[in-house]
Length: 123
Image 1 (cartoon, rainbow, N blue to C red):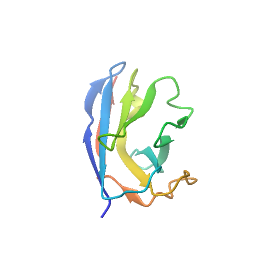
Image 2 (tube, rainbow, N blue to C red; image 1 turned 90 degrees about the vertical axis):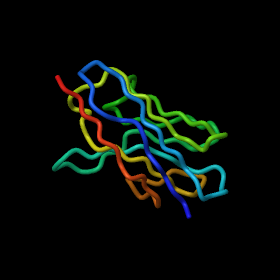
Image 3 (spheres, rainbow, N blue to C red; image 1 turned 135 degrees about the vertical axis):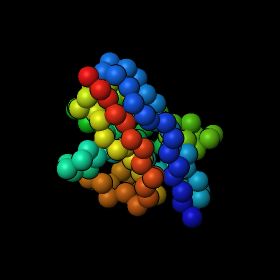
Image 4 (cartoon, rainbow, N blue to C red; image 1 turned 60 degrees about the horizontal axis):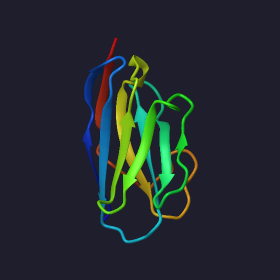
């Protein structure tokens, strides 16, 4: 059974940094698509970044380009999201997700989701 367990997040002042982690288990398929999404209260879920495991070029939403970095440790089956220069507008619940195929689906049609972790950025 596929499991995605998130850690990291928390509260930080604007301009600060946080790192999110997502430990994945329960699958043997390679490569797969993994991504980070976020959802603020009253807003739709938004894709932040996604990548095919195995070293493909990642995709970033325009709102986070140059500030966020998605990376992976294949030996640990762990996905990371390094968030720098955080802004109050980045405040949201962040979710990691996995799609067990060698392509990334459109939108948020991922089959597996982490439990979510809150990121709060104060001004």
